[in-house]
Length: 88
Picture 1 (tube, rainbow, N blue to C red):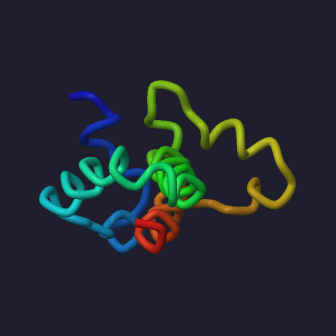
Picture 2 (picture 1 turned 30 degrees about the vertical axis):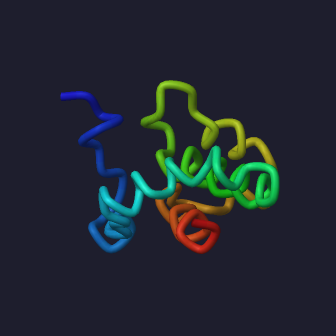
């Protein structure tokens, strides 16, 4: 199995922020429609979505952020999904 798709790095309470397929599709449709007005929010959202995959992503933004003093104290990449959901 591909750990990017099926991997869970912590317990279910850390990985249980399920947003749903329909809302994700609507978000993806809205990106090109709202880009000019809301591009900072969209970039923030996509960055934290990528960050929430942790070191399971093929290109890991999580490993890069672990080099910085504040981010290396965060133990769970899946907590970034909360910021994604608020920006979403």
